[in-house]
Figure 1 (cartoon, rainbow, N blue to C red):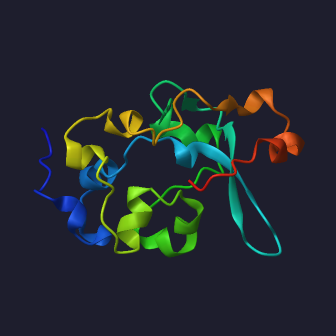
Figure 2: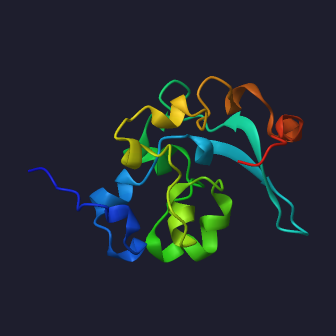
Figure 3: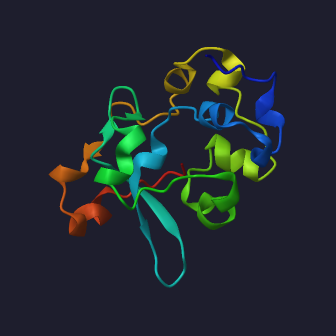
Length: 150
């Protein structure tokens, strides 16, 4: 049985989306799979180019998505009811964050272009420029901070 997606479902409130629609919001950028550093005093979050061990650098998708918490218990599971608490940890271009903030999807989003690779074609994914976390000791992650805003 296939689940049909409602027309323009991405414009609806997040808490009204079906599980299939929720998952379809992901643009496949892989930015959420970058390890982040958070300043304990200011709460500022910065992204690094050090990727989660489960990120497939070619597809920019989690290689073990359905069972990722078995391998990475600290992985953030986004849900409509926790966006207030964890949404700030997502990149500014993230469809979940944008919709939570009442903003539209970017024009390169696959739901708008109809092309699954539009995120990569627009240069909005991490394809090809991450470093696997098993190659970089955590104490060295500061050396991999991304200066540009994601």
